[in-house]
Amino acid sequence: MDEFIPMTSVTSGEGQTVTPDIFCLPIQIVNVCFVGEPKQSSEWVLIDAGMPRSADTIIREAEDRFGPNHPPKAIVLTHGHFDHVGALPELAEQWNVPVYAHELEMPYLTGKSEYPPADPGSDSGLVAKMSPLFPRHGIDLGSHARKLPSDGSIPVMPGWRWIHTPGHTPGHISFFRDADRVLLAGDAFVTVKQESLYKVITQEQELNGPPAYFTPDWQAAWESVKRLEALKPSIAVTGHGLPMSGESLSQGLERLARDFDRISIPRESLYAD
Image 1 (tube, rainbow, N blue to C red):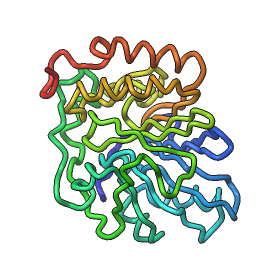
Image 2 (cartoon, rainbow, N blue to C red):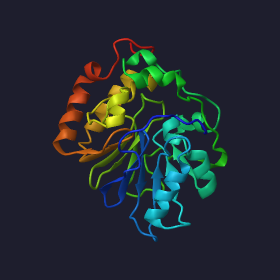
Image 3 (cartoon, helix red, strand yellow):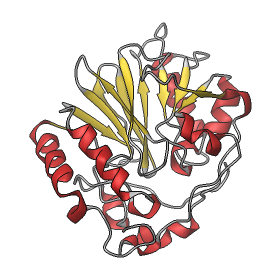
Image 4 (cartoon, rainbow, N blue to C red):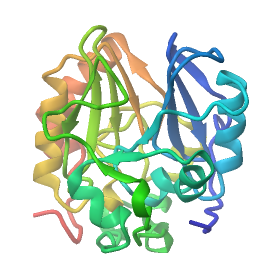
């Protein structure tokens, strides 16, 4: 995927250690996560693959953390939107690793389908208004694409499980580790108002539903937030915005699950009922 999107945030390139084995790296307006102890002998996994033209940035960070010539066991995707798979073709080819995703995302990862049109009327923010310019076509990973097991396990991430959190996309998933209640939520909910260019740039923290301009099923999205809130996560790393923990997370997520229709569902849009 080669399209360059000329948007960024003040935190781009400034990674954050969330737990000893989870490192969140913002790339322009989206996060990728490195899961694994930062040492040369560590096995590790990449969660999502950032913006187009970000492969070199991701590879540099991987080599800094895990040493040169030490690729991940796999890349695991929350979903296949352009800002989560931008560097994926290059990374999968260079590292020669499998790419795991939910089976309902496979049509978008094997070149068979494209996502629904963006919804610029979902919000008055400038990012929402620009969204028809964003890529929505699928990519073709060929033999690298793998379906995750249906039992919720992740073959390359012991101790973690995937949770189906559709709405933003049909096969969107989030990842949860029961031992410490860490949640990698993808875009099931985010910690920035992603529709607003000013808030994307400044990364002002606030808990919201999935990016409205690319969310076609709002009732499913609400159910997904309820499902994640019921887990009572201690820390949440989302696809957009800074990691969140403590009372700000628990209270914000409880409020979002309760008032999702008022907080997140657009009053006028292509997809809101």
